[in-house]
Each structure stands twice: as C-alpha cells, then as structure tokens.
Amino acid sequence: MILFMRKLGIGMVGCGVVGGGVLAHLTRNRDLLQERSGVDFEVVRVAVRDLQKARGIEASKLTTSWREVVEDPQVNLVVEMMGGTTLAREVAEATLKAGKPLVTANKALLAECGEELFALAERNKVPIYFEASVAGGIPILKALREGLRANHILGIHGIINGTCNYILSRMADEGKSYEEILLDAKRLGYAEADESLDVDGIDAAHKAAILASLAYGFWVRMDQVYVEGIRKVSALDMCFAKKLGYTIKLLATIQPNSERAVEVRVHPTLIPSTHVLASVSGAYNAIAVEGDVVGNTLFYGRGAGPDATASAVLSDMAEAGIALDAGCVYRGFERHSFNGQTVPMAEVRTRYYFRLTVLNKPGVLARVAALFGAHDLGISSVFQPEDHDEETVPLVILLDYGKESSMRKAYDEIMKLDVVQTPCQMIRVEDFS
Ligand SMILES: NC(=O)c1ccc[n+]([C@@H]2O[C@H](COP(=O)([O-])OP(=O)(O)OC[C@H]3O[C@@H](n4cnc5c(N)ncnc54)[C@H](OP(=O)(O)O)[C@@H]3O)[C@@H](O)[C@H]2O)c1
Image 1 (tube, rainbow, N blue to C red):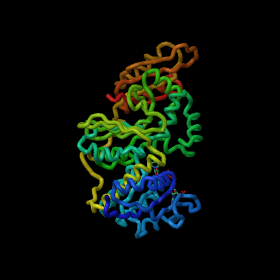
Image 2 (tube, protein in one colour):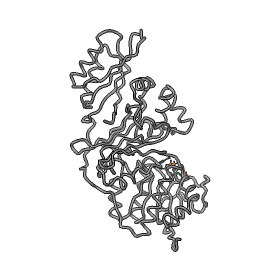
Image 3 (tube, protein in one colour):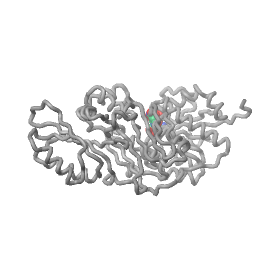
Image 4 (cartoon, protein in one colour):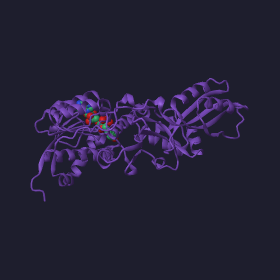
C-alpha cells in the first residue's frame, strides 16, 4: 500500500500523434503507473498550435505558448513531443535552465544538438530522458545503458526505420517497383506526404547517431554518419538478391574497427535471407546487439506510432518521477572508452553487390573482373540470367571484402568501359561474419 503519493505536474509541448498516445495511455494506465512508480502524474499544461482541435483534455489546460508550459510553477517535468530542431531546442534549453527534467521523443533534436544539450543538462544537474527517440516502443536505450553496461559492444545492426522496411518488404514480397509501393504506403499512412526524412535515410541516421553515442561513449555527430536512402533500390535488385540468397534492408551498421574508431553507417544492404533480421517485415523494427560478455541479443517491436512511442515516453516519465521523488543525484551522458573517432566511409571494408548493364557479347566479364582485380577486389560470385537475346543484359557480381575507396575507383573505371551501359547499381553486403 502506498502511504504517500507525490504528485508530479506534467507539461506537454506538442500533442499530436505521440502526445495523443501519451495522454490516452496515461489515462488508461494511470493506476498501474502510480503503483509502479509511487508518483501520481497530472498533466497540467499542454502547448499546441491549434487550440480548436479536440485533444481529450480540458481546454483550459491548452495554450499556444510553450513558454507558459515550461515556466508554469505547477509543471515539474516537461515532455517535448513537438518535433523539429529549432523551437524544440529552445524548449529543451529553457526546461533544463529552469532545473526541470526533460523527456523527449525527438531524435532529430538529440542527433543534431545532443552534445550541447547534455552539457547544459550537466551544468544544471537535471536529466534528459529520451527512450522514445530510437525505435519507439523497443527499450533499446535502457538496454544499452543498463542491461548491457558490462559489455564492450562488438556491433549493432538495426532496422530502425519502419517506413523503409515496409516499402522494402513489400517490394521483396510483391515484386513491385519502389515508386508503386511508395504511393501505396502514403495512401495507407505508412509514409508521410513528404517522405524524404524516411526514404533518404535521415531518420535512421539520427537514430544510429544516438545508438552509437550510447554504445561507444562519445557523442556522434550527424556529419560522422554515412547515409544512403532506398530510392534507388529496384525490383530487379530485389529479385537478384533473392536468387543469391539475400534480402535487401535499410540497415544501420555501428561497429568498432581495430583502431578503436567506430563505423556508423546507414544504407541499403543485402543481408542473408537466413539471418534473423531478414525476417523482420512490414513497419517493424529490430536491433541486433553483440556484446563481448552477453554474445548476440535481438530487440524487436514496433518502432513508431502513438502506442509504441507512448510506452517509451510514459516509462521515461515514470523514471523521472521516481528519480525526483528519491532526490537522485543526476547521472548525465556517460563518456567512456572511445575517443570521438569514427571511420571515414572510404576506409570501411565490406562486401559489395553490383548489377551492371553490359553489352551481350563475349569477353565482357573478363574486362570487368580485370578492373576489380587491379584494385585488389576479389569476385566471390557472378550471376547472369539466361534466355536473354537483347543487345544488353544484366551482369550481377558479388565481391569479397574490400575497401570502399578501392570499390569506388574500380566502379568509376568500369563505368567508363565501352561495353558497360546504364543503369548500374551498387549495394553493400553484410554477412555478419
Ligand atoms: N510519430 C511517431 O510515431 C514517432 C515515433 C517516435 C518519435 N517521434 C518523435 O516525436 C515527436 C513528435 O512527433 P509526432 O508524430 O507526434 O508529431 P505531430 O503529430 O506533428 O505532433 C506535433 C505536435 O506539436 C505541436 N506543435 C508544433 N509546433 C508547435 C508550436 N510552435 N507550438 C506549440 N505546439 C506546436 C502540434 O500542434 P497541433 O496539433 O496544433 O498541430 C502537435 O500537437 C517528433 O520529434 C518525432 O520525431 C514520433
């Protein structure tokens, strides 16, 4: 039985998809949250743009001024669910300067300004909670910071953008083009009207930067993340990948190299169809983390949407409430081990899939293979569909491990061959070895 229940005033900045989910589930699970945290949460002020929209909260609590929320003496904890990086940064800074803990779902804000915000939080001795910023309902940040604290992280591979995974899964299953599935994804609400943040890989890169920062103990900047989106993945590549025993995913790869620097990259990737990540389909997310003590782990679930994201925000609110109640000493961003170094993409060693359009005549493969060989790139398999009598034919080549800079040089030279036409395609391959 709880004898004394601390009341915690919540100020919400933003009440859209995520904020709406938080309000709904706070109402639904209020008793459970009270029992588990010993804190009674009361939403006292909510900032929105449009006061006329129905929100499921008393109109008197609504305001269009985020400052009113942050500065309200009844607000003990600010939950930022507005999005963007300009105003959201002002909200975050004002909250921390006011000595109030901040809960945020905003990956863009943390990826772009995390270092400065954590420094400010440290100066003011107030915490930032941000579980909802990566992979929605999957508690991956808590797992990295707490559950896997005793591990050196040997690698993280993640499918962390639901929109891209939805599009690629349907392309693989239905053999349809990217454009066709994108239109459908927009109609069904799986993609935004402006899809670029998702399909150009930016959203996944924001999340990859946050994951890398927590796993390797230095704040990874966005300009240290290599990003390629999925716009150029074709139905033909899906089909050839399948024949070769692979499937194509937008994969975030975060792993240290031998010189104690970290690769942080997001790009379409061929992964073996037998790997557990290959079976993650639709809008789901999954993150495979390998630790030197624990071995392989896998985290799977819904990465977005009002319910999954509310689960993470409410968990953060509960943690903030418990910490405030117990008068916990502030634990900031924990720096450790790595020294701020990321591996430039040119230095990355990986495997490659090439689909070249070549003239249908003898000797072409030998000329292409010679150029790969000249750049120290070995071919592991070659595939050419039969029954072609056209002037040009696709030539699919899988390379062994090689350096990105060598692959780029070879690719440029191959594209200059008179027997090679457009379109051509290059996708990296991950075999998890
Ligand atoms: N959607 C997801 O599944 C998901 C998952 C994980 C993380 N996130 C992150 O959560 C954050 C919110 O996303 P969302 O999808 O909930 O966005 P959203 O539906 O667009 O909601 C944004 C909210 O902020 C309010 N707002 C915008 N500008 C404002 C201003 N200047 N002053 C006061 N209020 C303002 C909007 O008011 P109106 O309602 O009046 O327009 C709306 O209530 C983003 O950082 C996003 O990256 C989202």
